[in-house]
Image (cartoon, rainbow, N blue to C red; front, side, top):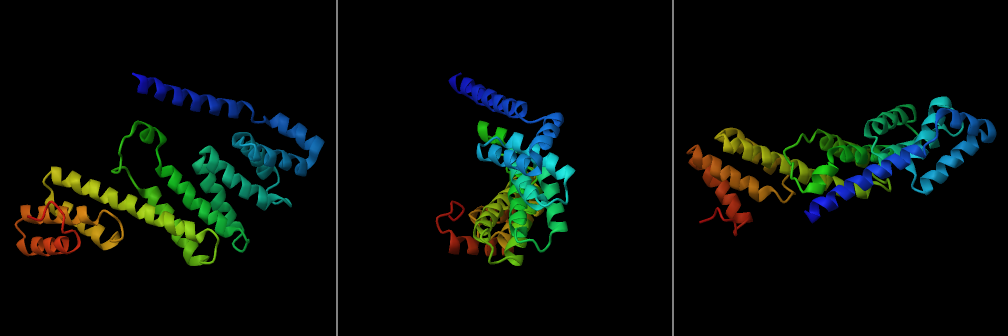
Length: 257
């Protein structure tokens, strides 16, 4: 009961924070008034101050207004870069991806293109995360990993195109994390097939992990799946090859008698 109360309090606090953030965001008429009194530079500074204070919801409202009204102004590139981060922090992933793609398309030679691509990877990773599932401890490794694949491709693009970028090292680490996520997905689907006695499909999933995610910690489980499936299919040669690899790399596996 205590845990349920605590969980409800967490959700209530989160909702309250969103409502407070939204209430502090400027309306269009407020933006017009500030724009008239302070000009573009003054309005942009207001947005920067709100971002610095952690009020990303209000900041993105201002930045979005500036972007829509002055898409090619003297501050347009920096407004868009700040807006990318603001959308990321407020969880507006679709808006974030849209402005990232626009920025990269219109500014291919900009000095911060690597940052935009890096933020695309982070945004796609965020789409794949589910706060509610994490809060209640639900493992949903079988959910569609398409956004994780997109994030992986974003980070790979960054590393290949801008190997000297200051974001390259972190992108590399995140790629390893994503590979583990994708391997876990393949294992979950293989288990699903095994429960339905679709052993060929399950074994193929295990082999896919071996071939594509050999540097993750899911290789042992993939080999064990292959051994079990080939045993069920009475494919002795394939079973023995998988078992030999399992013994060589994971001698403590429970599958080794």
